[in-house]
Length: 95
Image (cartoon, rainbow, N blue to C red):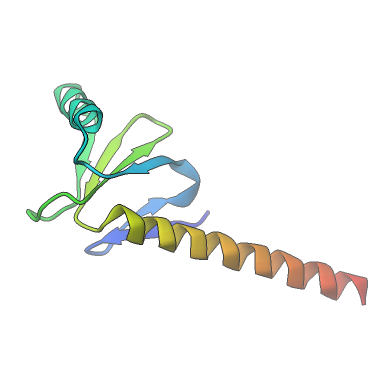
């Protein structure tokens, strides 16, 4: 199980992430408000401005102070490292 740092020492399971969005659009604002009313919001922004909204497969909504692009890059780098490790394992098996 791989975890992604979403700021201030908080981690989320990479496999559970469905979407990462900017909090600026009206639909995302409604999604966050609805999740707050249903107690499905996890706010890990530590009192700072929310810069990304992470939606999980369990329908939890995570608010982070780290930009969505930064989290996406961390996720992509983690996936690229996994692919490189898998390729290296296959090369070792062929020898």
